[in-house]
Image (cartoon, rainbow, N blue to C red; front, side):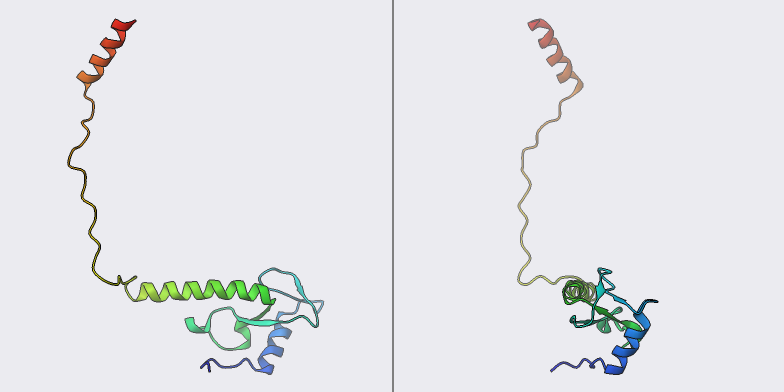
Length: 126
C-alpha cells in the first residue's frame, strides 16, 4: 500500500471547474487536445508531492492517460537525479578502477628547421 493520499471527489470537481475554459471545455495541459466526456482522465500534480508540492485542487490538473504516463516517467527520472545529487553523486561499487598508463614515447612535434628541410627537398624534386 502507498502512503500517498487519495485525490478526493471534491478536489476533482474543484479542479475541473477551475480548469475549464469559457465554453466549459477541458483541455489536456500537456498536449492541449480536448478531453471529452467518457475519456479516461488521470490526475497529475503540477508540483510533485515528493518535491513538497501541495495536495490540493490548485496543484492538480487533468491529463490524458498517455500524456500522464510520459510526464510521470520524466518526474521519476528527475526525482532520482535530485536524490543522487543531494546524496553527493553516484557511489561506485567495489574498488576504484586503475586507469591505463600513458604511452611512454611521445611523437616529436616538427620544428621550423624540419619544415624548411621538407620544403627544400620538395624544391629539389621539382
